[in-house]
Length: 381
Image 1 (cartoon, rainbow, N blue to C red):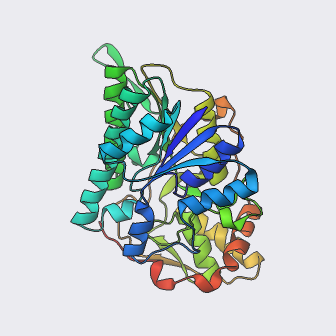
Image 2 (cartoon, helix red, strand yellow; image 1 turned 120 degrees about the horizontal axis):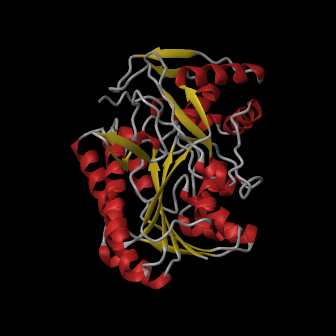
């Protein structure tokens, strides 16, 4: 089918484009290089340079024979997004096009306003573009498990059945975000739920946990096709950061007690989840919510795993507890459900020692490029 990926230049967007085009879909990409620009402004550029989107598409074409349509522009501008939708006429839309960093959203007023303006305006524009140009298309929106926070009850898959004074109703599971970024994701879900009810849109909202990894089936053996690999506090996810810290001889930074527990998944499983959602679309008037993760880890447990695996390949890895710069629970109950994607056919990749070793060996080839000053900024909130 015709699949439009918004945010197609990003850590998830680019691997998704290769994966879906290799599977035979006609893929279009839209991006405005927001992440690249923010990384440059904050001096936290990725571990290795990544060519611009047009050059990446050319390289992928030489490897695979697949073509990708590229649209460079800002999706907050209606003139641009309407041009993209009217030109491409997608049957499915994958929405990654948001400022993706919780720490960046908490840096200062400017970063906060950028996050609010970008994330909410783009989501609203996507909704209106679908309504006007492709009303039957299926929107797959990347949410985050961070929308739920860390409640002291089990986290259901998007919805909660409530019994109250002898009556029952199903509601969106209560949200309690821990950053402005996560709050914009909650607002996205509320916007989508309103327009699903109002205009009978078809939406799958994926509550994704932190992603780790670099190598996928489509880029294995082709380092020039790797996605961005951030290792800084602003844009790097914790497993990716810890592996770079281990390779670079920088102590693993565990915030406070390190009991913060989240649901993680391999980059390859993100691609699976997107494809499963694509191949099994939501119905008209349905907001379908999947919790997208594979394994639960506490931060201190991850640090110990990475220290042990690093030692097995000759690295001396230290762990350092630092004062937690964030307002968050460092020890908490955490039991989220995640069954829908497994029922659709997800074949999980688990965080094995072999996976960690492969990542470490790749990072060690770029060891000289690691800048220690990028790793920890201590962004407080």
